[in-house]
Amino acid sequence: MKLFGRRVVLATILVVLWIALAQPLSLQEVGVAIVVGIGIALLPLPGADVYGEVQLVPRRIGAAVSYLGVFLVAVVRSNLDVAFRVLNPRLPINPGIVRVKTRLKSRLGRLLLANSITLTPGTISVAIEGEDIYIHWINVGARDVEEATRQIVHDFEKYLEVSLG
Image (cartoon, rainbow, N blue to C red):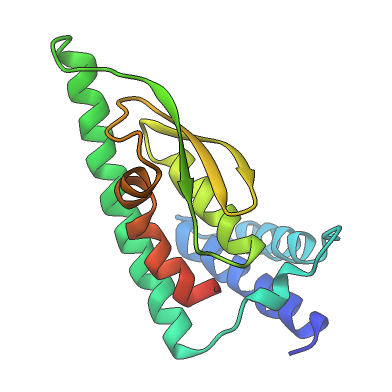
């Protein structure tokens, strides 16, 4: 699919999502959704065409939907973990920065992985250098790169790898 077609698909997805989430729906809301969706889709992306990394095929769409479920479960679990640590001072807090490795090849996949880690309470992506991601972790459970990767990245990565490469 050419760049124009990808941008049309992106704009359509953004408009549909906006309309699905906007309640109560009005004509003005639909108009704003269309303007914002098209505006975002037309933004220039310096350096690379990340739209080329997205392919709308059933296997990748299924992996993306599964990823959203895994992500939501991780967010709920980590919210509860951080809340319990705040409410119970006896629970350990051992902050630190750990290095994890990712198998993801696409820049969009690495970006989504780093953002997913940051959106999960208790972890913040600090830097991405090649296949390494440096993460600030509220309670470091492993200093070993492989074990930290398994604990933080593995669940996200297996679905992102299928959907984005």
